[in-house]
Length: 303
Image 1 (cartoon, one colour):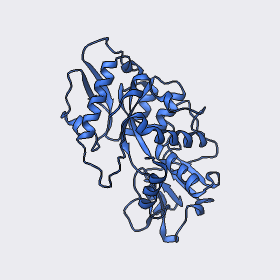
Image 2 (cartoon, helix red, strand yellow; image 1 turned 30 degrees about the vertical axis):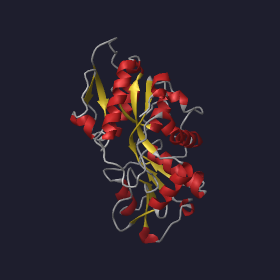
Image 3 (tube, rainbow, N blue to C red; image 1 turned 45 degrees about the horizontal axis):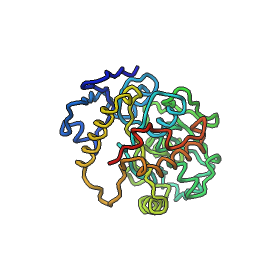
């Protein structure tokens, strides 16, 4: 369960936060605080801490995949979002296929077998939304398969999903060696190997064009705190100060695009899109608004 917060004084927060350029200064101790101490207790792979956070309240603070947060919020979990992106990127290059059988266009993926780690994986929601809205793909005509259960216990995967056991095989091996799938949604960029191509052609250019037209970044993980922590406005403001400082210490993006935006308005379009995609893909029991993800204080935080 989430730790009760003292009414005053320094607090120690059980925290799940992976190693990224944006977290380096914070995790190294280069951003000190007299009020907040982060206990970094999460695993090296942050998503392994998401289920314990939403089901058991194992962490007081840390990153959380945005679709997991939306589901947790919809089902009444005591969590509050901070408008601070801890992991953001474009997702157009996260759908791979085996090019040895010839090229496949996005529309031609209809009728084929596609594997994804979990149906509610945030990358998968972004990729499917982009396929539907940018390339006219009918998601219902794809044969989807997953192997991981949702992080939020109340959510049930749709019945049309096929389940599979990886049996020690990676998604890449299942696609390129075993030919279990015609394509896979990867957890990162398409594998650097000659058989792998992005289903979305010239994915980097397509992502930049999408960004120019929509003004959005397909964000993955945002910083989240428990409602217990949110009862201490001084602690919330100090967490925010530390996050702003650690972001300042990260290298500037090479293409000039901030994929880790801070602040509600800087993230509004990103959140509107992922909520829309989540709703369309039946991730949520009800249509949500951006503003309900925050309380008055976290909504007012600005970089």
